[in-house]
Length: 279
Length: 81
Image (cartoon, rainbow over all chains, first blue to last red; front, side):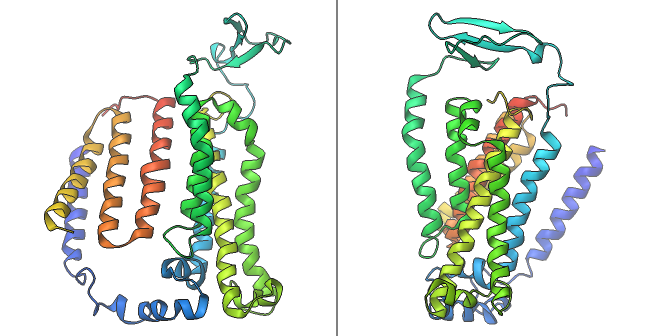
């Protein structure tokens, strides 16, 4: 079986390398891709959309449909991870994995509560993971200091995508990573307290809705789907600036969807689907 | 960029890619895959595709490595084959 697999891989790789020889040279100005639409986009992007970064205007405006369905793909990935991995309820669990550990903060004594046992009602008891290690002061402090700056950078990347590399996808991933850093440095429960599962799911859907809703709004105003010209009377700007603002609204939607999907996937993955005890 | 440096990065990409497939330790494979993504990000930057490089650095080298590590911690660390 291994030899057949190796044979298929080598054969496919050989064909790919053979086919790659027919490609035009890298950066060739006479290649078909650089002759037809690319010059038009590069020359007119500032004039037509007020967006100096041509990549952003292509991604969110000229090729808006592609990006909308990419966002839908990200959302679907989150939903699929939820349906495949999430274990609702505590039934089907083995006896020892239903145990919960509590730590008495004042004395440092650990209490093991078996399945069906009662949870101590004092606020001195703190729930801890089964694989609990004492919190490291350095890691906790550094991560706590870093999280706001990571989030600020994420917002900057989303908002500044018009002028520099970046945009909704990258900014959303950075924002999601800030919450993941928090979940790793403390524990999953305190991250989930700030960003609950319902919020994750709702925000992921909201992001896609903002994108598709902007398109539908253009349709309602009598223009084509995702033709941001239509937004000019609503945003009180001229038609060219409306395209720039439309791109921004769409990027915000993408950012929200990507951020919450990343957090959702991480939480489900790291807690074995129980949304309880993380890494 | 100098072609020597370009060639060195390309060689490292190939080694990281093959290494992440061959290595028995799944955690190591995940981290080598992150290194592969980061080197690919360097390659994109050299080619002038800064947006793609940024995405590769965020998604490929950042979040997907975290997902791999989380998945390894929640399953097993050794492969069977």
